[in-house]
Amino acid sequence: MNDKSTDNPEIKNDDYWRDKLSPQQYDICRNKGTEPPFTGEYNAEKREGDYLCACCQTKLFESGSKYDSGSGWPSFYAAAEDQRIAEETDHSRG
Image 1 (cartoon, helix red, strand yellow):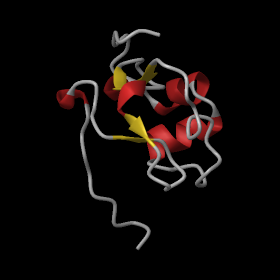
Image 2: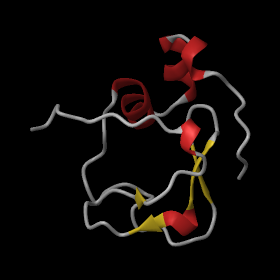
Image 3: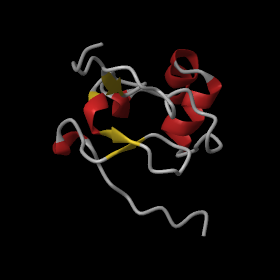
């Protein structure tokens, strides 16, 4: 794994992303979708390593900051580097 950003996801068109990403990755990364809780491959992941952006391979989180929140999605108490993470409050699902 690496923490080097290789692409700028802002300048690629939809055709590029549909070709590069799986349908689920495309929905999550480009449409703000999510997988159902407790179904994602990284929820129960215990190995040491880094969690990278599926689009640009930027390191977002380190396994040492991962914890079980009980939500069904991977949870982290710290970003790898705060300036790489943008937080938004999601009011779309009530």
